[in-house]
Length: 164
Image 1 (cartoon, rainbow, N blue to C red):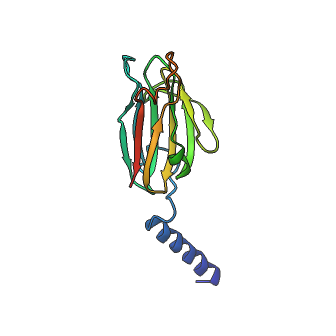
Image 2: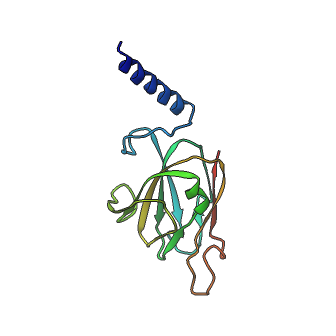
Image 3: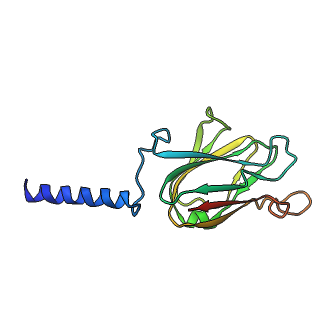
């Protein structure tokens, strides 16, 4: 084997070893149905629009695994997904804005860069594909203001994403 071939083989083994140890997040093909990406659904509000909530209220994810967090709003009002701590502690692949909820929803926009606060309109959803890197507990909030002047967070719409 030539010297160049040896170097290429060494680099390939090193990268594979680092990925196996979890030091470099594995790259999926971009297709969330490829078996490398786990889909997790987070619902904002409720279908009957009587509660301000995140469902489930607590999600547990594993560090260095690839997820697509599907954030759905089946309610009749705007809700917000805001988790700045998690955003800073994760490597983001993409954020897609969808025209509806469910498997038939189609992307209408893609956010390039970090996900900040995102308002999700009634009957819409987003998909955030990311790899959480730093373990910890991260708050999820909805700071949309209600007619009463209180935010949905103040009304109890709080959640937690734990990265182990």
